[in-house]
Each structure stands twice: as structure tokens, then as C-alpha cells.
Length: 226
Ligand code: 0O2
Image 1 (cartoon, rainbow, N blue to C red):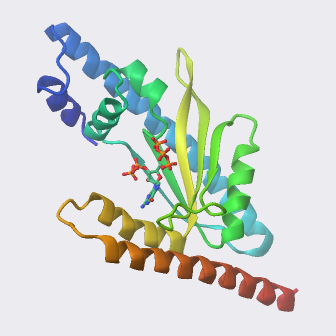
Image 2 (image 1 turned 135 degrees about the horizontal axis):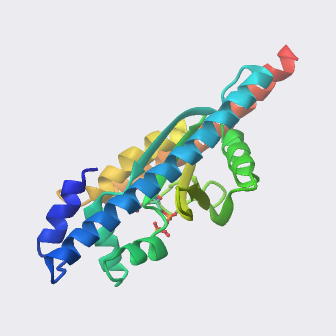
């Protein structure tokens, strides 16, 4: 994400500070905020990588397949704040948005999703704001994933700041499904999506059953090996 996006946004009609000094102040504040969110992502990613390495020492298996992360794009931030009827400024971003820093953890098996979530929130420098279990309670469209909103302390030379990070944890199969379904939501050219939605729901249920079956097979293999 480029700061130039934000500069363009500030200088166009989206956000209209009155004075040039105000424009530069906003750009500087925004750059600092994005650095903070990036730092929070790095911290949480490192925590997850350490957990993954430690767990793989036990049995040579990695509960985490891979980790993706992103900081929300400036225009998406503005869109969301406007939808929420909030002002467009740093305080609003920090106070109203949970997902400016987003991490997606792709786990091997369903029980790994819970293991990873549990180990992360147990750490004493993590504050759990909210957990949503869309695996036990899937969305009506079939979406499954485990969501955490956490706060982590980010240390700078002069201050410590608690920063919110959204962590989505799901299996490879759930992630595959969500990527395709996301396109249906955001592709405006797609008009009549009823049949696609029905098929996606069917796939989501098949995937959920397969995920459980795969976990059971892994358990059987483990029992034989032990
Ligand atoms: P994007 O483009 O992925 O960032 P909130 O974010 O708290 O205002 P909500 O609905 O209370 O919104 O939070 P929730 O349900 O935890 O969903 C947050 C994110 O989860 C979404 O962010 C998506 O990334 C993902 N998600 C939730 N539901 C679905 C779904 O039905 N399908 C897919 N593919 N992803 C979903 P954004 O900002 O909506 O989208």
C-alpha cells in the first residue's frame, strides 16, 4: 500500500482538510499509523511462527501451512468509516476499525485452528477483544473460519501503543472456498448469483465434511504409528 494513495485521497474530494499544513499533518499521522499497524502484524506473525516451529518439534508436523497478512488499503479504510458514519481521521481509524491490520493463518487440520487460536490468546501480552467461531456456527452462505480480534503492545522509542489486529484462522480447504466466494461478493458485473451461491453453499458443506474426515484419517494414522 503506497502512501501516495493516501496523499491522492487527501488531496481529492474524499477528505478535505482546509489548510495545507493540515494536509501534511494528516499524511504524517497516517504514515505513522500505518507503520504501527505493520509493526503489530510483524509481532503477531512472529508469535505464530514461533508456535508453529515449537509444535513441529514434537511430532515433525506443522499446524500452520502458511500465513498471509495485509494492511487495509487507504480507500477501503475511508469507505468503511463512511459506511459507519465516522469521521475520517486517525482517532476514528484506531477507535472504530478492527481489521486495519489483518492476518490470515492457514492451518492443516480443523483441530489445529483451535490449537493455534488457544495458544495465541493465552500469551500474556495479548489482549483478546473478541472471538467469533464461524466453524461451529457457519454463516448462512457456508463461510467457515475462526476470527480473533486481539490487541498487542507495540513498543516505540517514546511510547507503547496497543494495536488491534484481526486474525482469521482456517483450513486450506476453507480458505480455498472463501477466496472464490469473495469474488462473487465483490464482482459487481455478476448479476444473478443465486445458482452460484447455492453451489458454493453445497461446496462449503462438502468441504466441512471432508475436513473432518481428513482429521479422522490423520488420527488413525497417528494411532498406528504410535
Ligand atoms: P475483506 O475484503 O476480506 O477485508 P467487521 O469487519 O467487524 O466490520 P463483521 O462482519 O462483523 O465486520 O466481521 P466478520 O464477520 O468477522 O468478518 C470480517 C472479515 O471476515 C471480512 O472482512 C472477510 O475478510 C471475512 N468474511 C466474513 N464473512 C465472509 C464471507 O461470507 N465470505 C468471505 N469470503 N469472507 C468473509 P471484509 O472487510 O468484509 O472483507
